[in-house]
Length: 393
Image (cartoon, rainbow, N blue to C red; front, side, top):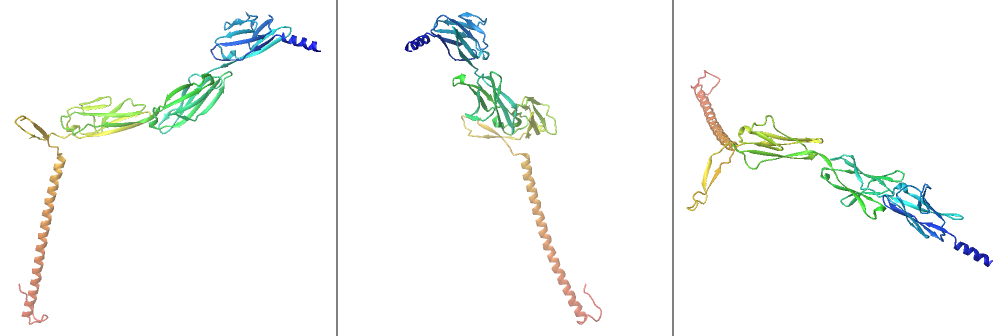
């Protein structure tokens, strides 16, 4: 019995065997497929691809595919390389050793497909007061990439969609965010994570484009405008998209002949009072219209007075010209107030005089009546009912 056990042990110690190692490689890289031999005695070694096509027969190429190369063939190790690996090369590679009985092991080749930098698709335009709908897309990865939206260091939760394309996956993440005019130009980013990136990430940066109606503001000139001066009005316009054209006009009239328009600027040289009026600047884009107006008031020339300030023998010409800046309308108002006051005084004086004269006449008439009654009583002997009445005229 002991002799039989020793014989079996010696047989198994000389038995040939083969071992294979699993391999993981990035798409486009180079894979090394190794078959380890035990107690090899020169028997036939065959390596086959996942479709069971023979690649090498004892070190001799059997399949015409230059991407496969035999790089090592010894009594302990057989190794081949596969360059420019694709996902179609993924699967089990057979290492077979033909002796009295066939021995084989399978080396599994796994291919990782890292994602490219994701893209951002605008599903719904961002209009002031509405919502923006953006989708981040990673069209191809294996295994599926992980997507994350970020804004100012904070994650924005998105709705994730996964599509199986056979060997690879397509992943998308969609967000909907409310937008205002202040959000125009806001920075967003979509980040893609994947095991093949070794802790790194692929980032797509995106700037939010918010559309809104224009705003218009006319920048007025400083100071008072007089006849002979020049007028320059600048129309400041904002909006997205920015209006291409601005329109200048004069309300209820046409623009003066000397008016020149250059872009957003209106210029009028040698002003006169005939140029007075309201000027309008208008702008429009696809999302609305806006306007602003400026009322021009040109004053006539006023007398010039020369005042000597700090005149001295060393600087006899130190004079400053001053112009009376009192508008004609103010002067007219003061005169009208004085005239009105005089008229009121005259009316009050006449009324008081008439009232005093009326009171005197009333008392005088009352006295005459009393005197007439006395004369009548004297003539008639105090009997008013008898005799003929006589009246003192």
